Image (cartoon, rainbow, N blue to C red; front, side, top):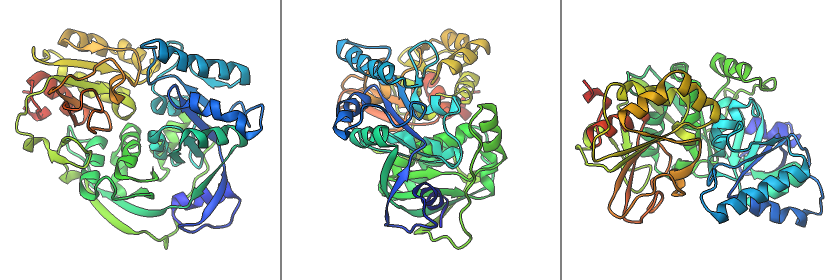
Length: 419
């Protein structure tokens, strides 16, 4: 079995599973946010339960339209807040207290560990595969079923093996790796398969890099992305007081639909052009395209290492007069750390707007909506038509390094151009 298949077998109480098999699995965590939770809460009574299956295994995070942008957003958050209070949900995270963007917040809080089986009513729940967990996005009704019963059904996925070798050069990181991979296989290249990462090159990837890669597995159509548990993983889990990990390793004779090899040393800073994450080019092929806005943040690239990279480029420089640069730390803890390290001052002095943690512009919510004809370089994960505003606006996905360099240049630019 593959790593994913072993985790699913363990949670289904079976000695083994095979690709295509339908199983019912026990859940370690069920997640929902202020968009998806109200729908799940509305469906919850239909399961004939008055209480959630486990008050400590539900996580409710207001992050998409929070802090509330309007009355409807306030009503969504109020619905989730009231449910959390009524049910005694332990892991409800209020704005400003200790909150943040859900997929950065849950690992930070130690709520996911290696070997877990996690569902979330958000497609980027696959982020936690970086920790050696099986995690995947589901619809709100499935999340309601999970909250009521502690179980979910799955069709066991087949797998694609991604063997990573080498070490990346400066300014190349996890975002470039995953954009390169999606560019190779397409947005449906791993449809309902697990992307299983392996190889000696993984040692060169930080946990933040791995979170970025696993987060965007869904952009290749994957059911989940997953990394093996190594010393880097164990150290992160220990530092964040997660439960003891349960480590599963793929069998030597595990079956994969195909194997893809990527040498990190060969990668260049990569940009996904509109309107698909698979429409990738190297930054050198971007041709100095003029831009109007830059967004640095999101569940993909709003962690402290991302902010450090952006600050390194922006320090002592100014955002181009024609560009709006919005920086959004992914959690309150990251915001405070960025404050203590002087990063927020660097951003402000460069001419950036610094926001409280929120998904905000990533989903076209608020805090940076695009007008007709505007172009944005974003460290977010999707660049579909109308994703960040007007249907005739354009989003270019890139790393924090490319985003920061582009903010200074006023055009899509390589960090290597910042002399």
